[in-house]
Structures are given as C-alpha cells and as structure tokens.
Image (cartoon, rainbow, N blue to C red; front, side, top):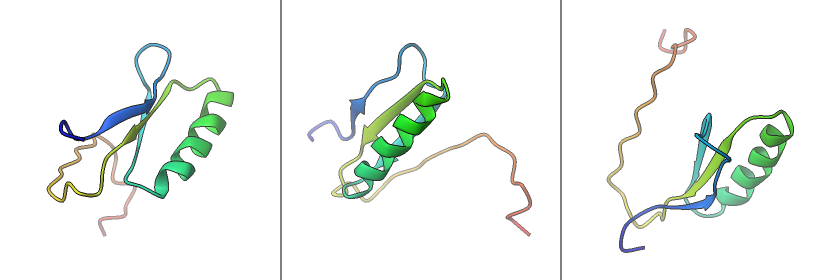
Amino acid sequence: MAKGGYILEDSIGAPEIILIGTGTELKLCTKAAAQLRAEDKNVRVVSMPAAYRKRLVVEASSSFGWHK
C-alpha cells in the first residue's frame, strides 16, 4: 500500500483493457475480466486502495455524446 495501487490480475502481454477497483468493486472487476478474457481480450485488474483520495484517470476515447 505504500506505493499505491497494485496489479491483482495481469494480462498476457500488453493489456488492451485495465479495470481499476477500490475495494468491493474488485469482485466485479475480476468477473468482468474473466468475461473479457473469454472474448480473447488482454485484461489487467488493478487494486487501488480507497485511502488514496487524489487520483487522476486519463482516457483517450470518444465522448459518444455523453457530454451534451
């Protein structure tokens, strides 16, 4: 915990998707990762302790119109 988050489940090779959970959400992340792996996706699950309140997540993606 001294270094922040850690990899709970790693991908084989470079991850296509990184799922980040902060506690109870980890169970959902691991279930989602299993489903995605069944679809041949490289998925990494990261545990990020909730004790760290200052976070910034940056995602390069399309807005899909949600900003309107």
